[in-house]
Image 1 (tube, rainbow, N blue to C red):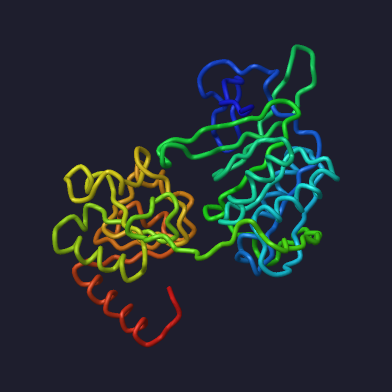
Image 2: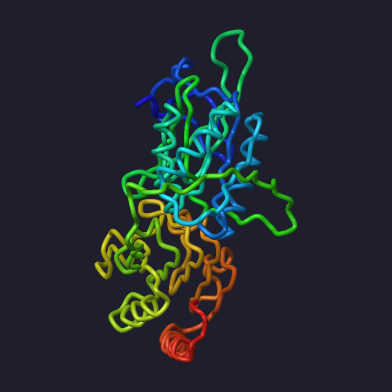
Length: 350
């Protein structure tokens, strides 16, 4: 495998992240930002329009920062298609434009296609990137500096992040998790992806029988789309039972703050924060959470934060899209009852 752990380059990465990961960076083992960046947007019929727009936006931004040519492609939806067939069609398009980096959204199909595509291109696949940073480096004394991509990938279940670079000239196929990224505004003009034709195989070797959604009660918090978190203000038997009921009604994963875990109310796997999981849900509901810096470090990429706390001075309110100063003992039963009424009345899923 030609991917290497990022070492010290004596500089800082954008966004305040340090490039220092221990050791010394060998300048001969750095990725070259030359070539073409190919951004693949799945058709709206395959994935959500949000994922397609977000990967186009991020690809446009990345190409500009790297100084690379960019090509944006999608494919014509022509019925059922296996990942192998999609990878072959994309490999042909990527080869024609001399791709150095191929970017896909980290969707179910994207994670299937990326390794196959990397194999066909003779490159490497990096799945589930939480971010792609740009670092400026100077390969040797007296040489001109250049910009290279640094792929940030959660490891050990999201407890740590790893920075990766590719060797010179190595093609990289990366999938980018779009859940934690800001959706581009409708007013922003995005590049129109060029459709390529990928004909479905007459007799595909692999056939998908069923797609089974994960159980929100057991799914890793890193992948949860909705999270309900219990803080110290919800740390008693009756309130936690009400929080669990609400999480089940919302089909959400259950999270916890440090005091709740330390007191033994919930397991360490449910901990969110600097020494726990970093989450990127579409909805984050903080119940009885004060909002310590330790905890907020794990929720900074949540798309929408709603909080309920009795203390009007709780720091969590400064980071919430919507906040309510209220007693959970009064709010939770009413909220659960209202959700049941909506559900039983046939309302759309929350």
